[in-house]
Length: 582
Image (cartoon, rainbow, N blue to C red; front, side, top):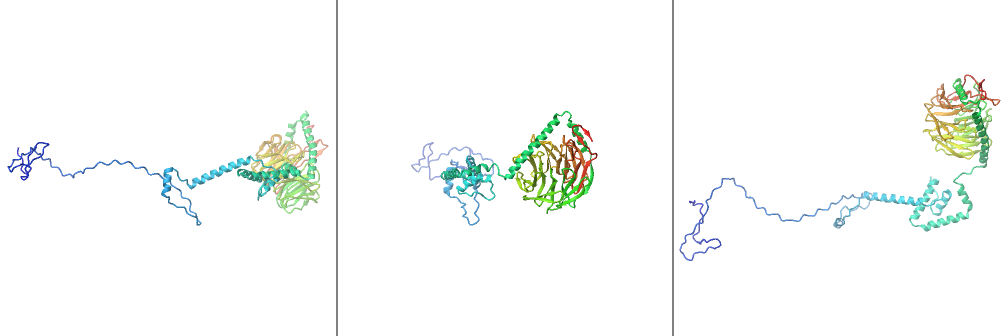
C-alpha cells in the first residue's frame, strides 16, 4: 500500500536501533554497518469529516468527600428591657461568647420581660389566694369594739378614713393571716393573751359586746310607745277579725252584691266643683274625720282650710319658710299636720293656731301620716329615714333607716301594728311597730315608688310609682298579687276606700285620676278634668248613723293647680244587714 511521504514517520540516522518484540529494549548496533530499519505496519488513516473545532473539555477531578457541617443554633429573639429615663443604668446589648456557649450547651433560653411580669403576677395572685384562705380559717370577733381593741394591741390603726365595720373586720383578718404566714406567732399569741386577760377582768365589756350588734337601745318613751301600740293593735285586730268572721258566717250577708253596689256608686262619681286653691301648684289634700273640712297645701308654703261641701275658705296656716309638701288630718282629734321642705313638720289646730313644731330631719320632708290611735305620726324625708313622733310631747321616738335612697311615702295599718314606707330606691318596706323590725321588703317596681296605702281588709297593700303601674301586694303570701297598668305617666298617690276597701283610687301626672275595683282590680271610672299634673288625692270617710248605717265615701278630692271635688250623683246610705238603700 502506498503511503504519503508527508504523513510517513521520519527516522533519525544518528540513533539506529533494532526493533524487538514487546518486552524487549532496543539495542544499538555494534558496528558502523548500516542496518535497514524495519518500518512498522500502520493502518491506513481515514481523514475524519470536517468538524468545527471544539474547545477541549478539561478533566474535572472528583470532589473530595467532606463531612457535613453542623447546623448553626437558632437564637430566639430577646426583648430588650425599656431604657430608664432619668439617668438609669442602661443594660448592655452585646452578649459575651461565654454566655452564647453556655446557652448553646445547656439549652436554656432567656425569659422575656413580659413573661417575667406575667409570672410575677401569677405568683402574687396565688399568694393572695392562699392568704385569703388562711384568713378565712381564722376566728375574728364580730363586735366592732372587740375588733378595734385587737387592732390597737397589734399596733395597727384602729380605724381608717371612711372605713366601715365590716371593712375593719376584714382588715384585722388579713393582718392576722399575714402574721401567721410570717411565723410571728409569738406576737399573735401575746396579743391574744392580753385580750383574754382584759376580757376576763371586765365582765361589763362582754355584755356590751353581746348586745351591740343586735339592737340599739332606745329611750324609755319608745318602749312605752311600743307597748301602747301593741295593746291598741290587739284590740283593733280582734275587732276586724270578728267582723270578717261575722260576715262570712252570716247567711244574710251577700258580699258580692254589696261590692257590686259600692262599685256602681263609685261609677256614678261626677265633678261637683273646681276651685283655685293657691297661686302656686297644690301638693297635698286631706279630708277631716267627719268630712266637713278639707285641707290643702301648696308650693307657696301656705296650707288652707276649706268648708265642705260649699268649698269656701275658712283659714290659712302660715308658718313654713319653704314649700309645703303634704298635709293630713288626725283620725281622732280636730288637728292637722303639715310637712315642708324647710325640714320641719308642724301641728295645727283647725282655727289656724300652731300647736307644735317637729324638728330633726336633715333634709326636706315628703309625705306624712297619722297613726290610727292619733297619738303618733310619721314623717318621711330625703335624708333616707322616716321618723315616728309623739304628738303630745313632741319627742322623736324612732329614727328608722332601711332605704338606700330618699324615703317618700308612708302609711299605717288600720290596726296600728304595721307601717309601710316607700322610696326612690324602688322598694317598699313593711315595719312592725311593736318590735321595730322590717318584716317585708316588697321588690317589683323598676322605678321610684311614690305612693303606698293599706287596705281596710288588713292584708292588701297598694303601691304606685314612676313606672306608671300600681301593684297590689298580699301580705299573707308576701308577694305581688296584681299589677295594674294604670296610667301613661307616673302615679303620685294611691288610696283605698277607707271603710271596706271596695275600690281603689290612683292619681297620676297624666292629668287624670282613676277608680279601680278592690275585688278584681278592673277599671271602674276615669276622672278627667285637670289641666295639669294631679299631685295628690283623698277620700272622705263619710258619717256613721247609729253604728248600723254607713254612708259610703261620697267625696273625692284631687289637686294640681286646681282643687276639684267629685261626689256621687245620688247620695246613698247602705244598711249591710238589710241590703236596703235609703
